[in-house]
Image (cartoon, rainbow, N blue to C red; front, side, top):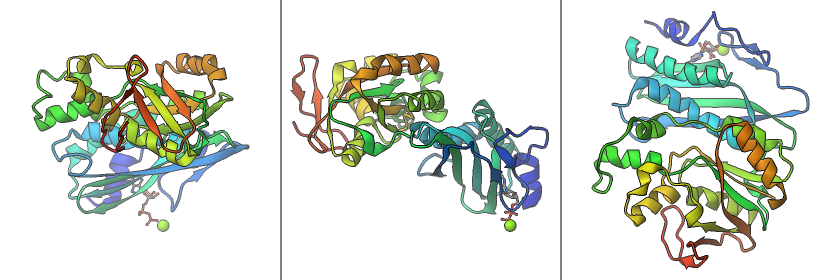
Amino acid sequence: MGEFELIRQHFQRPGVKLPQDVVLGVGDDGALLRPEPGHELAISTDMLVQERHFFASVDAAALGHKALAVNLSDLAAMGARPLGFTLALALPKADEAWLAAFAKGLFSLADAHACPLVGGDTTRGPLNICITVFGQVRAGRAPRRSAARAGDDLYVSGRTGEARLALEHQRGTAWATGAVGADLRERLERPTPRNALGMALAAVDGMHAAIDLSDGLVGDLGHILAASRVGADIELATLPVAPALVALPEAERLECLLAGGDDYELLFTADPAVRDAVQEAARASATPVTRIGRIKAGASELQLLDAQGQPVSLRVQGFDHFA
Ligand code: ADP
Ligand code: MG
């Protein structure tokens, strides 16, 4: 099968109607998108490389899902509605069954988000998947990393740590024993990008900074703190804990919660005056949101607090912290 045949068979979908914002999709020298007036174009790219981001053994459908999910998650953090995406694919060989499964996982998530594939590039080479997503956000409304203010509430969507626990299971790590539920593996292999929440939050006046969690809560919070030149308190007792994490030894539980990675939840800050509007955005998007601390003055000063409000001394990967 040649390159063009491969594209036609697996990535062109003549029967599928394109949304209004896509003037031209796959098949020409370029795609044409038409964002609504008064909006900005939000663009994000993420690459998945074999052995670094996934293993050859991973299910192709799950890989198709994840490659798009991590990109949609970036749009969610920007509060943008997805318009479409491009796919640059390097393949060692044209494996029919693999391609069909990959495309299935990819398109089922794309369809769920009304985010069509509008172009790409295909070449032979070590397996490498690079997706660029395009979205639109009302001009001036994207929640930037640099927008956190002292006094803001700090929130996280969903819960963190499950993907990390699933990964440690796969690695055969001693503390990650016991049965791995299918839902735990799903959290690692088929993350749910929080686009509905991100879009709802971008409409809230008083919503300030946001980031999506790919490298661990504390490390990614560090990006907001650095960009906004502020500090933060996290109340450890308020962190949502998944059932699978409850029985872990405390150090490992905190490692998963605070430095897990691959969570694809949203971490964001908002003025305390808009707590009701934030919870309404959570309800409207059917995405739980938990207040886990606050932003304070003091550039990049992060304090972890115990249930009594006392500072906890803890070294968390991605953010060296000493009380
Ligand atoms: P060009 O030579 O003009 O760069 P290509 O021959 O690379 O065009 O691609 C032909 C068409 O197929 C283009 O519209 C391109 O966007 C699309 N395409 C190529 N690879 C992919 C892919 N993996 N997924 C979706 N569209 C693709
Ligand atoms: Mg061309």
